[in-house]
Length: 167
Image (cartoon, rainbow, N blue to C red; front, side, top):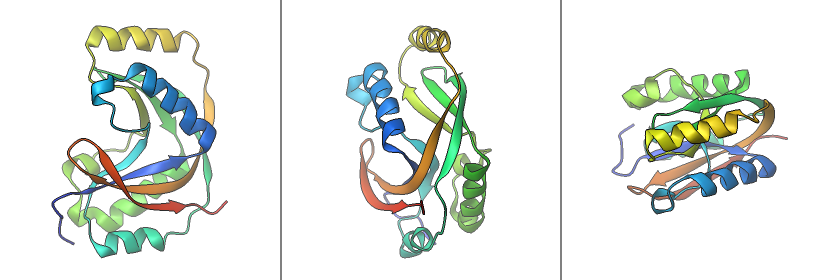
């Protein structure tokens, strides 16, 4: 597998209610001039745009699964919700083994799933939002219902392929 000029990004597809919840927070707290995307949980930042990448995900057999949103994390210049799920970790590990020869150093790091709702702000602004959200936070569940492959376009992303898990 060779890396094409525009790599593919793999994200987990969330159930509609969860997606709407995180999108609303991202819309409210992400700088508008840098908010090109909907809220997302990234599994890989740089996969090759090759036929075998699509083939791997087309042949994937996975059931939809629940994940726990366990807390908030400070990103320095932003805030994210931390996600915990054995199924998600297993999915990431299996795909990592297949794509290992072409994974970037970032994608080889330990997987700490999260959904970013704020980024590219001052540390003061991100700490204020973290404090605000932590004041009312209670753990909750969301559902992983599929995968999406996106072509990275230097800022915005273009949807390349979507896969729904088995219900």
